[in-house]
View (tube, rainbow, N blue to C red):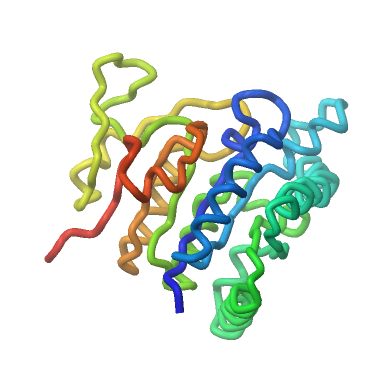
Length: 255
């Protein structure tokens, strides 16, 4: 069985710095997955339902959580249609999995979720997982699928979780404020860097470095490596795996 790679793609990455979902970025991901299939079974955790809906409705709903759930219901099938169209061009088959955190809370639901994703991978389907926003609001409030990606990675005993961000990784201080900030290439002790976690509102996704750090804590407890990489860089998945681009690796140190 091939090692499992979980890739979390947020709204900021999918929109490529615009206010619309970028087909070009989805194509970039698809090209990489074609090449990675021989090495990994890949699971995508993808945000973007609400960003997709915003392309179709303009009515001021965006700031109301309840209405965001309705927007997610509008945008999710359109987002999956985009994935299906683009991935089909690369002969990649996809399957949608909508989950809530409750699916990880008891043994029976965890087992069912694990079995479903495992079977999809065995039949050469790429599971695309998103928060089921129409029945749960946790992702809308807490973190743009960062925690969900960590729960999926640990459930699947993944080899790595790659979290696409809008910066290269974790810095010794906020790079949006301090031009001399230095990228930290590898972290083995989370307590040593907790003090440098700061936020900057991207205006699109609901996640930030705090939610990513919480996701990393979940993975640390189960010895899953986490990469924070710049999803705006072309070929960001393969190039982070090969070390061709700067990023931050979180790997639990020896006790």
